Length: 241
Image 1 (cartoon, rainbow, N blue to C red):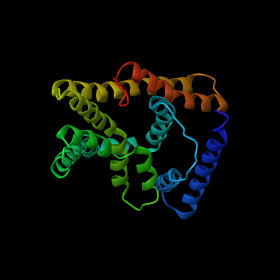
Image 2: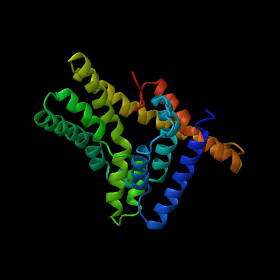
Image 3: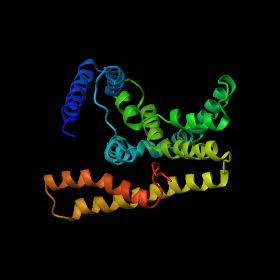
């Protein structure tokens, strides 16, 4: 750990500087982070950092999605829920379907199942990146709400496609009934857990004699607690079988 600590600290400083540069240039910081990550990957002699993907999910995803959900207007989401729902579910499915057939047609030996696997990976936009990019693009508020709302909800559909495509690649079978039931439970169960725990934490902030430091700590803990409960209930979009 001590051997890679200087490298990790350097990466943190680089990320901060890139975020400052993005703000100065008025461009979305994820763009600079992706470019910098690609360039850093070509530097020879860098230490190899191995991190459990489950740990990455648990450490980074809850606060990132919590922040993205915090900044979106739910009044606008309610207004445009039909378009958001179609984008988050139907468009993601048809995008994955298009990727599956195109790769099967143009890449020799690339099966439909492998195409769906790739489609499940590339079809959903990222919620954090979408929110960061729309801050620097002059688009109507309704369009911004649709894009950000869709990016928050599309994980359930894309990950169901990914997981069952992965099973199909390994076994040669795709169980549509099980995929549909898992999808419904992730959408309904995940939303229900979020609403219940969200109401609970709002009551905690309102009724307990908290101060600013306590509210900050609770705000940091809440997304992790919600993620953990959803994982235990198998309704998290990132739950692994």
